[in-house]
Length: 62
Ligand code: SF4
Image (tube, rainbow, N blue to C red; front, side, top):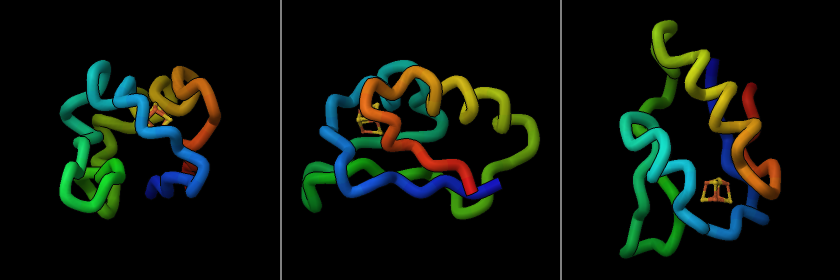
């Protein structure tokens, strides 16, 4: 599983607040970073929840 964050991410930070093991604010580049290129299997369920929690559906699961 991989994640892509859409350009229309509003950088609200909710995903980092709820899932800091997966997402991190990047203050230098004014974006959100995903901490993994390939999501480990044991985090896949959390990624699915994060995608559901994102208010603008910017977390795209590949
Ligand atoms: S919750 Fe969604 S809109 Fe907010 S920072 Fe994360 S990806 Fe972006």
